[in-house]
View 1: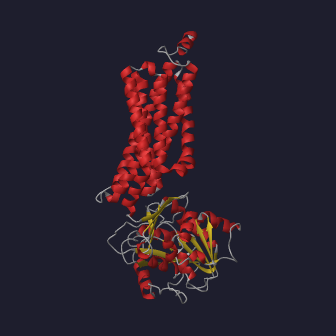
View 2: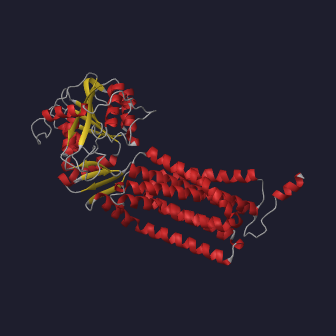
View 3: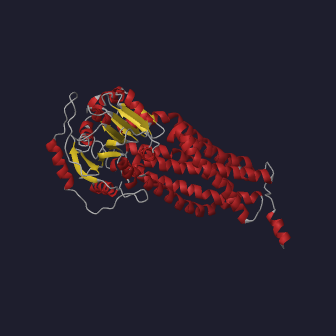
Length: 549
């Protein structure tokens, strides 16, 4: 009996192959490798683009991956009906997967840019498509393994355990290569849209070549023609889309940011878009979020900087603020001797140095010899300063300005953690103050008071306050700004120190425009913020972030 079993396992496909069983199995496994790499690129591309468009990368990754894994199980069940025509079924599945996966980024981006206003400003359409593409791509990926298993068994019968081991080994190695290729090759060299289209083309070619080249004799003439036509159509559509992707991106940017886009670059950190000219029309977007509006940024930066400057301020540290606008306000004080600015993205600093609109707005702050920019992650830089390996002048900083993205953005959550504020407190000189942009106390009180609880957990005493702008474009803080918001913006800040800092203004020296913020408005902002207090909120930590999106 064992001999009969071995003979059964060794039976080879009788339909005729252009190569021997050994090379044929290697070709199938190589195709598994390529298709697995493409499938993981589709997943990562959906996660990355959804996070960029909608924020909260943890939620987007969880939705995409969980939906896709569920759909893979559904696809595997549905593929049972295709096992009798496994080669043709696999060819059709790969062609459809290549088209769907290849155009998914384009469709998601288009839905965000052109969705009607009643569709949640584009977010509703983008979320709907994200889930829909995750389901469809997952079903198609799940259908691959049963069909490939059947194709391998037709080449040469072997025990199920060995065949599954071979398939999954090739699949997992391919996933590793795709997972590494996406961030280190496709994204920096081609971008998300072109990278997805190229991946789809590779996917279609690999699937079509395997079926037509290795199993073509198993197919009827009609099936071969159908498969050739399907793959040629898919490749033509992907190629046409790739040729037009530049025009598509320009049109989408105009739809999202208006017709006056002057700069649009993808740095190693984020997408940077600059619109308008000089003064009130200028707007700077980072990863789709408004960070600077020339119409009312003075009110925001004055409220962030000048209350913290009331006291000694010879040495100042700015965390974030690569646009140079917080530095502009700091440098208006003649008592400032040195300003260290820690910015993650060197492309933002370069733009703030060179762009005529931004240099006018920041009053050419980077030309001041007192300003010393550093390209680094703020958390890592503070850790190096604590251990003595970072640049820190004479004993500590009198003022620390945290001009950072909103804590509800997942990538920024660590910069609003108890650990981060503890590191920031350690670089303070005696009597030093920390100013933190904390979101709107009126519109997002839980976020605001969670920042307050986190600062207090780090051993600091806080003074809350808010400030109002002149309207619309800059609402909810510089990175939470729905365009054309109907009410005036409400910015929330926390001033913190080892002792409770007073809520007063430090007027700058002579020269420059007068402050639009006055002491009476500042006191009123303190009372307004205090009226929204939410007591007994837990602090946010690295291991347990607590900021709602």
